[in-house]
Length: 365
Image (tube, rainbow, N blue to C red; front, side, top):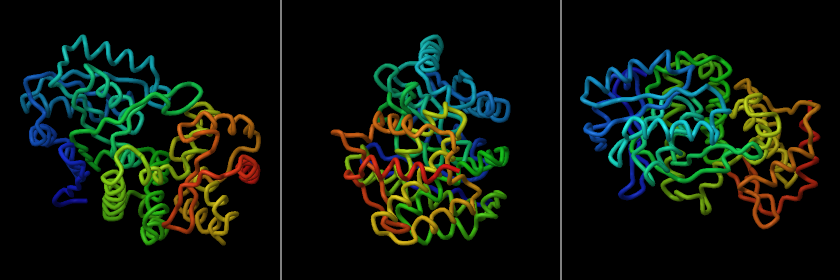
């Protein structure tokens, strides 16, 4: 992805912010922070995890220090277990110890877990301070955009959170070269999701170019990331707080979040659970009249080497109970994003529990 970085904008009036995608952006991090008004007189806190820290933390600290910033850092264990109130408490303590003030910023260097956790700290420290996303995974092309930040409760994912938009998303795609193959596959789940909800041609493009995406081909990756971010930015700009349209971004998430909770956070990567959830949603769509949708959708997911089945021993009752604790369960009704066709979905509030149970049983391998 050599060449001039691509800049997209999430249009939210006075709170609009850029998404910058390109190679070598960590080397220019201080310049980009100054461009969006992050002052250098107040200390910064970089939050990262123990997988990313050995690769990129020292580099980012050195670049920001050379740019005149005072920088502290905090490292949490990698994985979903760090999206907890215990980790949140530790980071608040760290921010206080390092003297962060109302003009400070917290930088999230890592994937979706780090972004959600660090963003929630930024949203609540001193009633809200600046926040910058520096994603290092493919999955984070989705999670770093839109301002949803949260931690998990043992009974339900993302149950404790707020909306807190970043000042900047700085996406250095060179960091993706160090991703394990399983993380690459999981990240592509959210990429193809953007096509499945919004852009039929892009969904088929993901399927056609799956081998190149899995191999982290620069040209294919550049196009896929820019397109995915652009779709999400467009949706968030229209509906920041998920009053209506933005809810379509939850395709696969009602069941996917339940899978993560029931299996124990970490057994399924987020993108893997969402892939199974999207297969389930396609089955529901097919049962509501969208002929051939299940085979069409699962072919796309399997091309990206993503799972489309559940373990045979997964407890259906436990999954159903977890879905009823989900934020998308309202007034006694399950709220599902159901595909009408590839590239077009509806938000359905009339999905019967019996239909969901049947789909779950049919997904078991």
